[in-house]
Length: 386
Image (cartoon, rainbow, N blue to C red; front, side, top):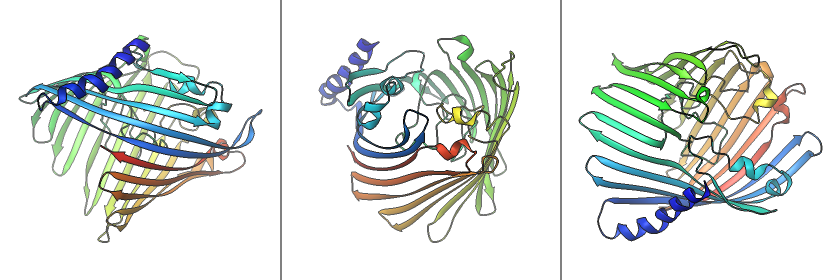
């Protein structure tokens, strides 16, 4: 598949640039980001205690071509440079970075050297048609059905990880998405994400509507060899926001590695204080959570098992010290694991197109908790937007 990614990169960098001057149908943007990362962890032998540094440099390019008033073509891609201890000490690191679970493998490890690697992947690559209440998209895209700010079991197609500090755009899926907008706050959606193996496919229908002061949605579908149904809501509880998501999953065939039935629900409350401080707290119940928790730390999160424990209590605070400087803090408590996650940080808008972020991620747990051995991270990023 290297030739496909090479062709995409060539068209993006040279074709779009040459056409942009001929009309105004192109929209081009993106950013360049430098991101050093410190990692401290207790790992199994042969590593044991490690203190590693990694250096990342990322270029993101976002392109949109609108040949008519009703048709858009979207192409967005990440080109990332990695150097440091992770590349040097973990034999399968390049393979993990280059993994593409989409129907079409567009991942391209441009260079893989003992101490550094360069990787390129398009994470948005889709056709969009819209007309009189219809919106049809085909290709690699983000199908965003979640309503919560921390955990989204409604996101059947491309759930994201709250712990991922380096992917603000969030992942996409190779999918077909058809939306029909009926009235104010009312719409129907059908989305299908085929996979290389049919049992890993996802297909679901969503109906969203407004009742009194609440936006409600109902979902039914097929998720990776499981039937699923549920929904979500978003509205106000007096002057606070009240959101929630609930999903049920039932195996079509017995799977010895998990329970045949699971329920996941996450309810959150958010509030903006007069001082500008924004606060959100969330309670999550995941009936299957905490099973083989140590293994889960190395796996991608999934809508049918989106947490490291059965119960999870989260809180996040953003406080503006200055119009250009925000203090941020997140805390997650795992009662059944007797562990906690702490994440302090700050965001600083240095200039109109230049942003700086400093962030920490710390796991603290009892000696019998798998989370006690999770990696602790300190990272900084400097991003120039163009």
